[in-house]
Amino acid sequence: MVAAGTGEALPGPTVLRRCEAIPHDRLMAAVEERIVDRHVLKLLRAMLRAGVMVDGGVRRSGAGTPQGGVISPVLCNVYLHRLDRQWETRGHGVLCRYADDLVVMCKTKGEAEAALAALRSLLAELGLEPKAAKTRIVHLCEGGEGLDFLGFHHRWVRARDPRARHIAFLARWPSRQAMQHAQDRVRELTGRDRLRWPVEQIVQDLNRFLRGWAGYFRYGNSTVQLDTITRHADTRLALLIAKRHQQHRRHGWQALASRPDRYGLISLNGTIVAPRPNRPWRPGAECRR
Image 1 (tube, helix red, strand yellow):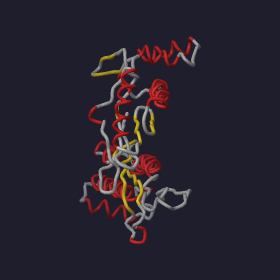
Image 2 (cartoon, rainbow, N blue to C red):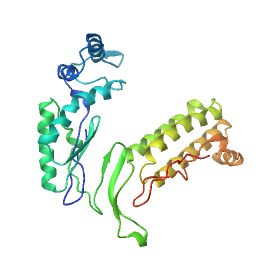
Image 3 (cartoon, rainbow, N blue to C red):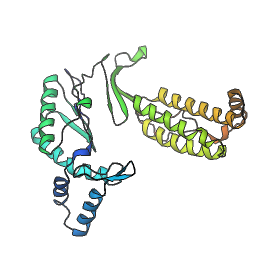
Image 4 (cartoon, rainbow, N blue to C red):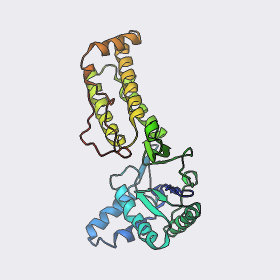
């Protein structure tokens, strides 16, 4: 879970940790507060004992939820709901949590430090601890550093338009890690092992990924990043076409440009990014060809 704190008068964050250490007995006790059906409880216990495959062998643990399991986020929320309840009376600042990632927004550095101490104490009572590498206090101010939360990088900035220089706001765009993941995924979908695949099938797989990625990251100030991923997808597809015909990369670009439909590959250029500061919501944005 993530946490960050703020400095003088701007909101910010405070701490981070995964659900790898949730004790199974405490987790089941939390579930049993609401669930009494013994068949459901038996199934949950079996899922927790299932373990994970590592180097050809099954590894089991008495703590943590199955990584990648479809029910893991739900179980994580069930257990960390206790943190939410305790924060109402013992916490400081505003806690914003999504599964095992969280951020605490505070108005002063002192409040952020108190929030961090409270968070460590509450997590210790749950048998957890914040991950040191991800735990820090951030002062969100103009020209200062930002923070990553749920794939977005958040930073306090001032409007660039000379007519709106008086406006400062919290901007957000895909984090470096999110951008790297997107580029890696595009590279995987256009890899050498797919040279014999029909181009239309590869484009279909690319479009499926690009639509999903843009659908998530268009909520913010992500225009530059959307354009970057579009250029990367164009480049990778052009290179794949050239390799299929054992030609120079120029051949791939020419083949892509010669097709009015670009083989059906969508473009993220022009995707409406919203909401924007001091502007109304504009629904209906779609990825276009």
